[in-house]
Length: 269
Image (cartoon, one colour):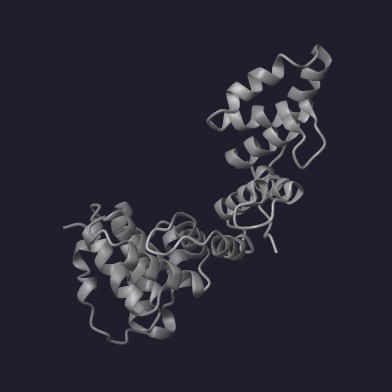
């Protein structure tokens, strides 16, 4: 019997088990040290002590098959238990399962309720996903301005995907007034961290002079970096730019790519 098979957690009884010695943060540290069994014990005790995220993290172990056989159905049960106790992380994850009909009913309305509840509780992934629901109209009425608001909230927590979608919104004027300079600012943030989409968007901006002064050397440099990260369309752009550069410019552009260093994403306030 695998490790987690012994933990009938979905039907857990709320018994206090050394609550002062267990919390979710401690469980995460134990997990990072490689002690899955110790982490599970700590997560369980944290849940029993009132930390709903304890069940979420055990659910994640079932979901990815760490310390156990992968069991998505058990993971869904644990997410539901955690969500019912107010875990924003579990609400978001369970909402995504309903969105995709993964071992739970495909139910866009329920998905949007769970995800946006997580968003309103301050969960960055929930904010990103809730914004995407409002952008596409799944489970909610399309409201692109509201989508931007949720992405802004996630971006303030350094959520890379939200920053990129916010950049595209400013680029295209979707849900917000078009602002090419703001779009470049946002893409520059994710590009600086090595995000493929951010690098590619920055390469296109420098290629066309959109929101920034046209600079084919930098455009090639960013397209080169995006290509190494397998960004679709980046190799074609790099090839097109190469044909427009002199030998000296190409040398400069490749030096730019070679010397480039990544740095952490910054929160967008």
